[in-house]
Length: 468
Image 1 (cartoon, rainbow, N blue to C red):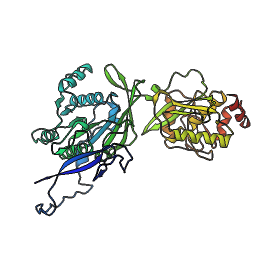
Image 2 (cartoon, helix red, strand yellow):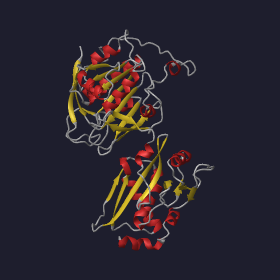
Image 3 (cartoon, one colour):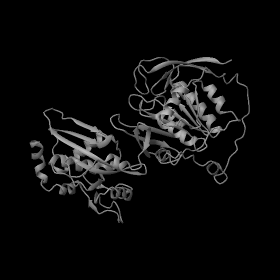
Image 4 (cartoon, rainbow, N blue to C red):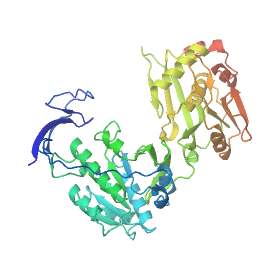
């Protein structure tokens, strides 16, 4: 007979301990350890001895999964792009995002598009009733899509439904995994043990029946998907739905994908009729630039395989504080400190008595080092009061010695800049061996960037900082 086993599990990292403690020794979180009871299996000495079955192996040549199970393309190009070209049968995806960002709306539009193409799609909601999901579908104009709806929380019932040989499901939405529970686990829904076991059981049946299952995951206050990280390791792809509440656009970012490139993004515009694709996101993030503006530069960034142009805005003001403020939106704070240090050490600029503000316009989050050169150009422009060339894009990585290093996929960046009407680019020396797209001004050191601001000499930057 199975015995009840008591353990203490951290709800933040999933570590297990034999006793309760106020602070988790693994992640350092306070008051995150919760007592949980599970039904343990029989001891090894009492378990019946049963011989395992031999595993049937296949070679790479005779494995037919890739040929017999093509990707399911929804027709929503931005969603398919983030997934690597469509949904793979038998795969498991985890979608996370802030509350109210549009996760359920995105998935409802996706399954309705797939259902209209003849796929058998199921939407299982643990948070809303079927009538509430139907109301959302009516608001989006999707009420006639042949999607099966259900409200369920018991994993045992879901497994029995999905494992029914008489029915052939293609796509199953679980909204959300934190609301699912197993009655054999003596823990509340949403706890680490429930989330881990529920996800494992659903994925096991989904792969057995070649069903693509998509989990909706809640996020913590830090923006990470709630629950143990082991769930992210179990699924084939992890998608984050990002966006600022003050902006209408949303970004679907693939942070993990076994069937496609990671860091690929899809861009949507939240409107009254639902999420609308943005086929040219660079035009969305760039304002109408009719004249040059101080403290502004355009970066040719790369998100996954997609080139993306964005405006970098810098602002420098005088400060009476002992430690002047450094505020960053959409970029790495530590990398801004490095760029400021390089400008001080290699160019003679002084930021010791000034506050520095940096913003990626439109709420875009750029993480690649290629934005270093554009950030430096925006800061130098804000410091000197001289606008950077408004018909020019910047991309390049800055080293600690001030050297400008080339970044990959320069041709893609140049093609995107040319498409949006830019006339030239400023990049690292040797960024592109052969270029027939845009004229490139190649620079090898951060001092070469100062030639764009001829009204200031290298030795006058310290004086300029005192005059701000």
